[in-house]
Amino acid sequence: MSLRSKLSVLAITAMLAVPTLAAAETKMGYVDYQRVMLEVDDGKAAKARLQKWLEARQKEIDSEQEALRKEKETLDKQASAMSEETRVQKATDLQKKVYDLAQKWEKSRGEAAERERKEMEPIIARIDDVIKNIADREGLGMVFEKRDSGLVFALSQYDLTNEVIRSYNSGKGKAKDAPVAKDAPKK
Image (cartoon, rainbow, N blue to C red; front, side):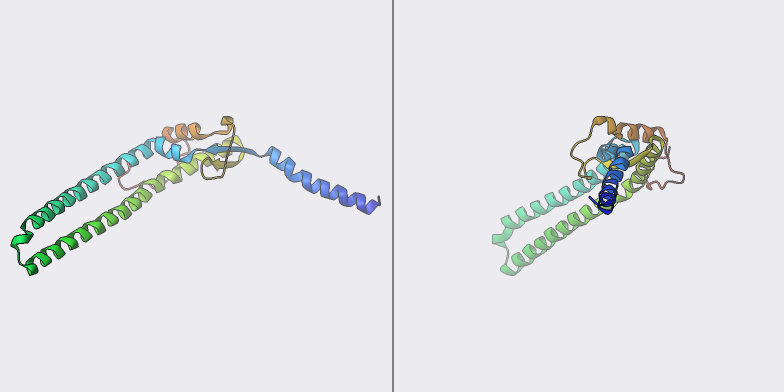
């Protein structure tokens, strides 16, 4: 083998070995982000506020739906005594009310998604700060999200979830001037 061939083989071997060595030195961890958001105090409070709002909306829609059901029953009972024109008009009015209620329900779903986004945004930002502080302190090169990262298996010793929850709730890693949702509790 010529000197040039030996140098090429050596260069290729070195190129393949260097990333492997770098990866072996990189410390990693993972976090179950969904669990963190459900278990931190602010996340629990936000979820309770959202649930209360959703229940109030659902109660309102249910009562309107019940009123429309009763109105339909009344229309069905009185239909034979009405003129064709009156019956058609009342049926059309009822159908419009049903359509309006369906639109209101869809609008409520959109509002719920928007409220959830606004409630969770500052919590997510603070969780990210806590994770960054833990990663910096522990010298971690990467922290993965357990569910959405494609992570299939990892040893539990690399799970930072409990530490993130504890640090968040204790106020460690709290970002200065972190935005807080309008209705979020003050600490």
